[in-house]
Length: 153
Image (tube, rainbow, N blue to C red):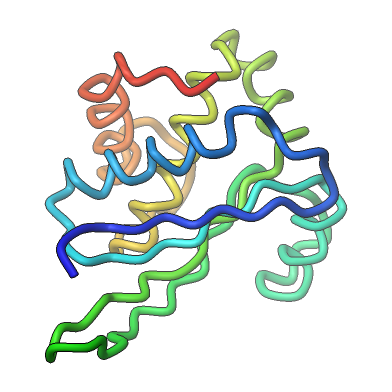
C-alpha cells in the first residue's frame, strides 16, 4: 500500500456530481498534512442524518455542518503493510449552503473548509469554540489558502 484512500457515501440527498472531486480534495488534504496510508470515509448527507448523529453522539439535538468520528486503528494488509483507518467525516450539504450564505463565501470554499476541518479533527486537533484565533481554526484557514486552487464544485 502506498498512499491515502478516501471513500465517499451519500445519505438522504441526491448524489452530487462533484462527490468524487470532494474525495479527491480530501486526499490532497491528507497529502499536505503528510499523512501516509490513511483511509477516510467522507459522508455527504442531509440535515436529518447529521442531526441524528449530533444528538446520539454529542447530545446536541440540532443539525450541524460537520462531524468527525475518529477510529484510529491500524488494519493489517498483505505483505506486512498496514493502513490507518482514521475515521469518518460527515458533512451536511444543507448546512454547508447556509454557512456559505451566512459567511458570504462560495459553496465550493465552504465545502473545502469543512473537509479540512473534519480531517484536522481526525488528526487529533480540537478547538474550544469557533473563535478564529483557535490554533486548529488558524491551521484550517492556512490549509485552505494553501490548497486554494483546488476547486471542487
